[in-house]
Amino acid sequence: MRTGLKPVLRTAVALVGASALIALAGCTTDPTVEPGGGEGGGEDSSEEWFDQKLYDRQFEERDVVPEGPEDKPYLQMINPEMGDTSEFKSEGGKKMCFANASISNPWRQTGWITMNEQLKDLKKNGVITEMETRDAQDNDDTQIADIDYFISEGDCDGFIISPNSTSAITPAVERACKTDKPVIVFDRGVETDCAVTFIHPIGGFAWGIDTSQFLIDNLEKGDKVVALRILPGVDVLEQRWAAAEKLFGEADIEVVDYFTEGDPAEIKKVVSDELAKGDVQGVWMDAGDGAVSAVEAFEDAGKDYPVMTGEDELSFLRKWKDTDMTAMAPVYSNFQWRTPLLAAEMIFKGEEVPTEWVLPQSPITAEDLDEYLDRNKGMPDGHYAKFGGEDLSGFPEVWQDRVIP
Image (cartoon, rainbow, N blue to C red; front, side, top):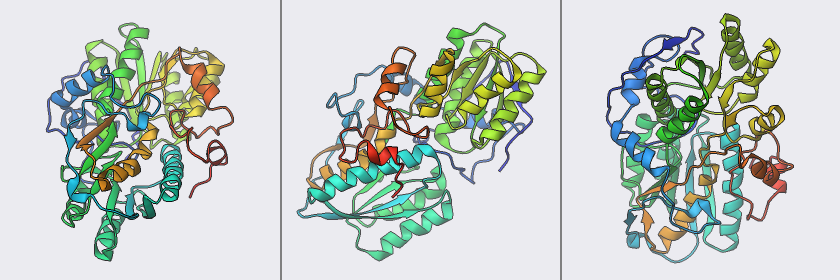
C-alpha cells in the first residue's frame, strides 16, 4: 500500500466513462485495483472509476425527496424499485449471520454500536433470536473465509454482508445467495445483484459533487486545494475523488492529492509541507478522519483557515464551530447500520423491499451546524452526528460511553 508523499498536480481533467460499480463505503483496499499515475493517486485511477451514467444518477438523487417516515431516515427510500420477498416469508425468530468488513475506524464503530442497539429491540420483539458476527479486520481473505464458514455452518436464516472490497468479495456473496437464504448487502457493494437488497446512501459521486462544488463556490479560479484521500481501490472513495477531480478541473482550481491512510500525523505533515511551499486556499477530504489535524496545520503555520470539507464526525464539527471557518460536513449516512436488520424483519414477513435501497445523504451546512452540535451534546469526538439512533433504548449512554460490543 502506498501512502504517497509526492503529489500529482492537476489543473484540468479529462475523465473517461468506466463500467458501473455499485457504490460502497469505508476505508479498505481492493487488492485487484492498482492506483495509476504518480504516488498521489493518478489520472488512470480516476478514469477507471468515473462512470457518467452513475454520476448523473447520483447528481439527480441529491434533490429527490425520499419516500418513507420523516422521522426515520433509516427507513426512507430514494426512487425505490420494490422486489418481492414472499419466498422468504416464515414464522418465528430468526438467526442472522453478519460478515462485517471491520470496526477499525470511528465511522464503523459508531454504526456497529447503533446496529447492536437495533438488534436488542428486535430480540425483545422476538424477530431475531441471534446475530452471529464475524469481523474480517479489513482483510479480504478473512471475510471470504467468514462467509464460507457461515455457509458451511448451515444454521443461518439470513446473511448480512458489509463487503471489505468490491470485486474480491463478489464470489463469496454469490455463494451465499446460492443457499436460497436471503442475503442483504449494505454499506459497501459488490459486482453482483443476487442479494435481495443492497442498502446504501446515495453514493460517492454525490459526496464528490457536494464537496467540490462547495469549495468551487467559495474559491477563485487558480486557487489551490489540497485533497486528502485515505486509500486507493475502494469504489466509493474513488468515486468521491473522480467527481471532485472532474469539477475542480472544469472550474480551473489547482489541486494536489495525497493518500494518507487517514493517519492524523500524516495528514498534518502533508498539509504543513504544502503550506511551506505557498498559500493553500482549500482542503478537500474523501473522509473526515483526521480533519482536525489538517486545520491544526494551518494554525501552526499562522495561516488563514482554508475553505474546507470534512465529515459529520463531531471532532470536525466542533473545530468548525470553534474556528468559524468556511466549511461543510458531507455525510455518508451512518444510520444505514440500522437498515439491514429492519430489512430482514420485512423480508421474513414477506413484505416488499427495494432491490437497491438508496438512503438519503444530506450534508451538514453552516445553517444547521448548531442543530447537530446541540443534538449530540455529550457525545465523544469520534461519534457521527447523523447516526440516527436517538429513538433506541440505549440512547444516549451507550454511545457516550462508546461501548463497542
